[in-house]
Amino acid sequence: MSQIRRLFVCTHQKSGVGDDVAKALKKELKSQGLKKRVANGQKQHAQVQTCNCLDLCRNCKKGPGAALIVYPEGTVYGNVRPADAAELVAEHVGRGHVVKRLRIDE
Ligand code: FES
Image (tube, rainbow, N blue to C red):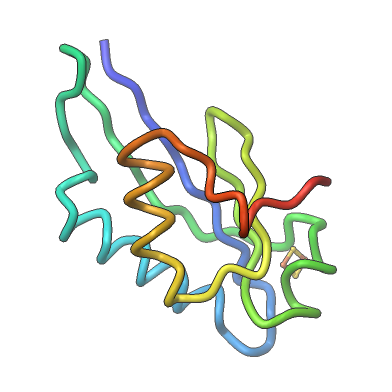
């Protein structure tokens, strides 16, 4: 049995920061070896998916970064910038820890 974690990144901003965040997350997943791995005897995959507005605009197009949601946990992050990708991938995807400074409540 395998587990898939999906990171949905909003790309609906005019600035294009969401595309840059998605690219940075993909790059980090690959470089940190977390795109596909086996942990606790279970295959784990992580994918980045771009999407349209997540209805989190206050923490997305009105701020410096993009909004994203990580499933299956349903963790919501806001104002994520490309520079945050390494920490987000290492902590959330790698260790299963929420990055509190980027987390937002809906
Ligand atoms: S524009 Fe990104 S959540 Fe609405």
